[in-house]
Amino acid sequence: MNKGKLYLVPAPLDLGCEVQTPLDQVLPSGTLAVAAQLQHWVCENAKSARAYLKRVGDLRPLAAPLQALDIQELPREVHKKGDHGPGSFDARPLLAPALAGADVGLLSEAGMPAVADPGSSVVRAAHDLGIAVVPLVGPVSLLLALAASGLSGQNFAFVGYLPQEAAERTQRIRALESLALKTGQTQLFIETPYRNAALLDALLRTLQHNTRLAVASGLTLEGARLQSQTVKQWKQQPAVASGLPAVYAIGR
Image (cartoon, rainbow, N blue to C red; front, side):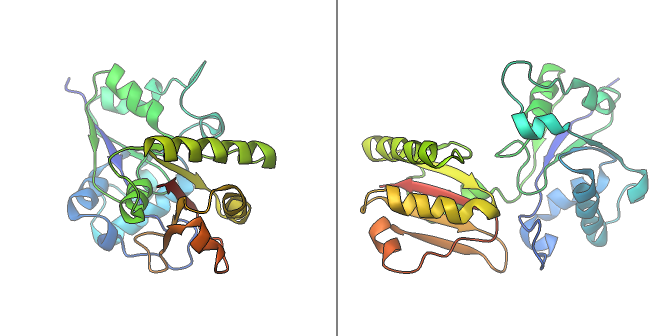
């Protein structure tokens, strides 16, 4: 029997927003067409996955009623500990439908699954099982922020979240800044809405005046915010932290 494929299906970046962006403004028709036809899903959160598929169904008929779709959640420990490392999660059982010949969709709550989100264990399992992996086109917050930052897009690194503890965070900021200024490699990291204010304050207190700092949130949405300037310029005006998940970039 021929195996199905694993489709990496992007989601809009409006999770938690009061106003949602029309899907057809941020996702191409080809991505919507594939999403509408999939009956088997692996996701970060089943509730938000159903809400997303309902929005897809408002634009294109779903292959099966929403209640009849097979939606499997990644375990909670994958969200907390990540997809990699010692004793990493074995996602192969989630791909049983693909081994039986059905296509499967991988979905995160926002953006591209497996990029700054859980899902890489599913992709890795698909490769190990000989299942074709097909990434679909849609918003990826890291690349959107990088492209719009004015910082180097030829040499960059994504380092995830910075430490929450103040002293460790300061030390990490200094290390990333030193690497960025020495090598020209843009350093990208992310933060949740409720910690944005603390992180922005720490960045402005720690970074050198001539280091460029870019902060982006809500890209592709109506209330998108993007600011990229030197730390000295940031300090000359009130710095307001975003109420949405944000991408930060530092460099020269």
